[in-house]
Image (cartoon, rainbow, N blue to C red; front, side, top):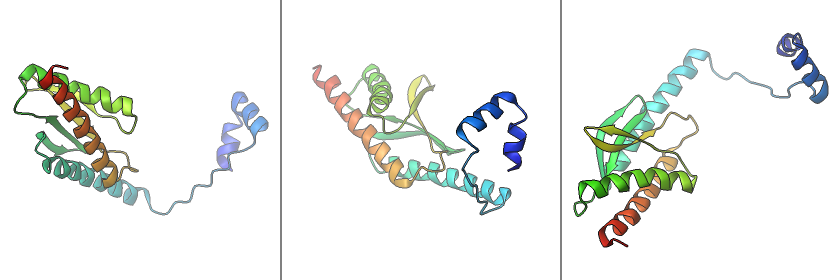
Length: 152
């Protein structure tokens, strides 16, 4: 318990440790730090490419920049919508997904257009998570595009 001994040198931590007890987390190292780093980087890169491949399956998505460093940028497209309406739809997807609470996507401006940005860096993210996130965004985008088309 070297960590507890070290933390107990600080009077605030010492008081906290005496009140709640020492940490019960037992960390078991199963791989060396370099192997863990390599696995994490590979995971991120593979999931960025997986997200790009999932986006490519649905015609409502345009990949703006290919997956790099676990980030892919893309935008919702609908031929019937004017540029301003597409901007509102893409920004609405960010808000809709945030309200949904399943995942977070951010927006950015690329070539004077709104693009969505998906970062796949979380090591707990699975391909199923990516597929579900993209499906939810497509549903939100189609709903918003329908409102823009009908003006309702």
